Image (cartoon, rainbow, N blue to C red; front, side, top):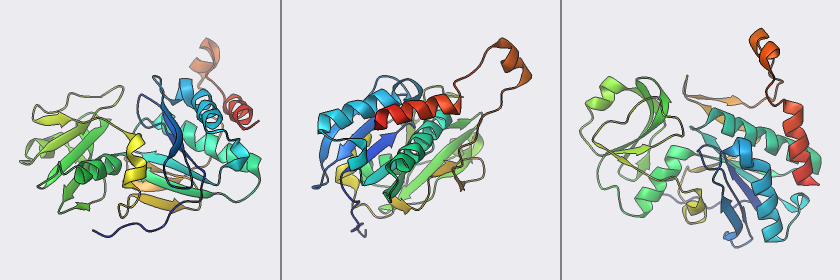
Length: 249
């Protein structure tokens, strides 16, 4: 297996809103954590407060950040988009060039299992997508294939080991033969050299399970339906950007 020899510019801010517990941390010049925290709440409730906390713990201000490392998914659509919006806002506030790297949540888990010697044969990793369909990643011979959708019928015919990365609100029960696996972004430093896991980006791109492609992240105001307008309102993009600005200040 080839190693990734490209290191990000440090300090690097990591944000991961893919799961039910938001994660953030700061990597220092030796590639180790200066500070990190896994919040008990998802990104909607904890993104800005957690990032502010790890910055303070590391003794840094946002303007000192040289790289942003983020999870592209699959995972919580809201959490992933909030992280994307926050990074875009912070980079604009900084007003200079910073590096971007992305990683896939299923590939991160697979790389960890490989590094721990847990995968010894053709193995499947799955995470929730929608009813009767899962996100899936096949791992074999130390090779990470691309994440693709798999129908429940196909999954039931798989004869090898299956690991399940659970979501906050799963659409369906995982098959009985699956092993539930924990999600641990804190393992990023020891997995950085894994080939193809961390991808340099020129713009933020999020994984789209629907067509198995990447789409450029373009922040746009959400327009409420008539029912939403009459019954109340959701948090607006401008309010989220204000929170991001407060973290930067």
